Image (cartoon, rainbow, N blue to C red; front, top):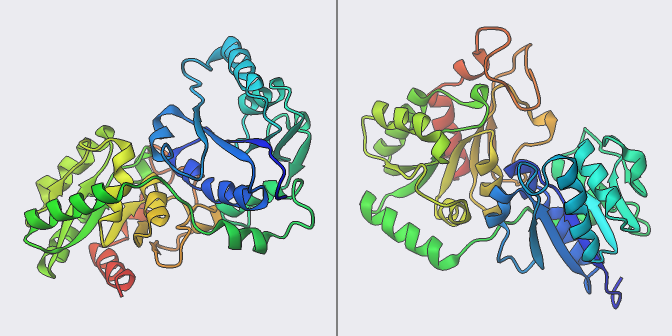
Length: 347
């Protein structure tokens, strides 16, 4: 729709990976509505990943624990959005709070999923097809907006996910770490996760790090401050040198550092999707979750390492403990399995 100016808000205040997987939708919106303004609403902790991107006019923060918390917060936030005079809101978030907030804005066209709570409050809905990747589910929200919508055409224009990266920071990170490693090729490791059962054992991360060092690589640990215990255990178990950057990088810098890696070994968590977004091949370790849930790497270079078991998946996010009491999904994945997968993604 060239020549038509619309103010569009894409709304997804969800987990880090979910927000990253919304960017193909934003890219498709840019294609179909090239002369429009597109804002993106996310959780405050995720905002640094998208600030500074040419793709997005403004990053808006939805903080359900503070400014948008409680009934009063919902009304206040909806009023703030109403003042912005959006023509269209596209909401990828399915919660009661999100749907109600969108309805209270009074925006005339509000897109959401039929499976959302209170979905009747949206003016137009699309089906959230669970057989598709999450990024493609989000693209389906364009179906009510785009005449003769075709998902394959939308995928072509959307491409992979994107996050903000700083090329100078990436180059400096690569130079600094390579210098510290003696010029070795670099492999990132993300050993943490919000969910306990999504964490591969720390001693196995240490073992694969040692194996990679013997083959001329150097491993770098990434993670949030909450991952410090897991990363500390990797360091304690490793017999060969590696670098621990866990808790030392603000989130906004993480994509540039991951881009400096030749590959990333990661649990099923947000950094996996950052790696796909910056073009770094990932070896993703899936335990309680499976690819069929729709959150596998959204690229053609990465590999998922997993074991086929009767009890998988045991939930969308995993949990704090194995419901079967054996934790075989992670226990049966060996350091050798992951080492072999790294070799494949680097070919």
